[in-house]
Image 1 (cartoon, rainbow, N blue to C red):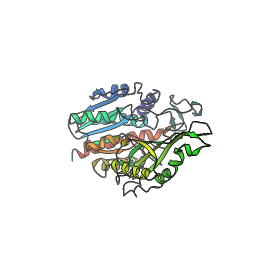
Image 2: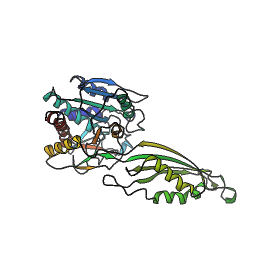
Image 3: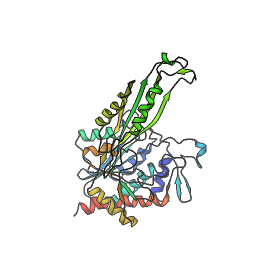
Image 4: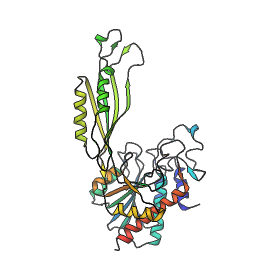
Length: 380
């Protein structure tokens, strides 16, 4: 059994459903402090955060990950218990295998091999971990970055081990992400008897044309790096459950994944303008999950392309698709940020898994990226 596989199995056994860590970060800290990494716990509220750094000089390369996982879903749908790592048909099954304990295990062992071969490497290496990524992400990386910024500790290159690959390992690297803006809308009506509609005000009827307008709005056309902005309604709730009552209110939740063609203020202004056309009373509360970011070019992207080609023999492509990641909190500091990790096919699903061969290939790619940046580039 390889060191990477053994570590991943250890991590999967820990039932770290967000925002729990269940000792995962203790395991990582124990391994890396033996290699002269300085350990720092930056915990906030119920969130466990870990900052490990080897070296004091720039450039600073950081691996970023999260030890929390999403809930399992129905246990009877799993072919094997989700927190008992199980190997079948060349794959390792378990919650978090791909998202993202597989990436964590791969970059920890990559760091171990790299330091053993290059103990006097240039610059610094850091590992940043949180247990608050799959949740609302209010006490995780965003708080750690605040601490680092306050003491002017700057990250130059950040690699997020999120599952970025599509059809085969390393075929895609995320060089940016769309922004995410969440909204909770309450439409205020007047409850009444369905037989006397003139005495009530049905919020479902009032909202229906506005809903159509919101979902048909062309927010932008995207650009070279980002697809067009998308609004998706995630929940609508109204009524008392009785068939003879006009409801007094309606609640709707929607989310916009937006490109760099838009900003938070513009989206809010345009949304209010659409709603105001229809003359109903409403309350609208917003939550910005993250702004869009883009690493258009630079040493980190170059090194990653070289490393993937060296290990796999094929070329990768840059992309900005998918959801959000904690990279959105690092990019505003000026760091180059990318995401590179396992296949995303089974993430958050029943019977989540990772290919055993991919696990070792990913670790080799991570090690080669370190070589390209902290050996080849720094010594050239």
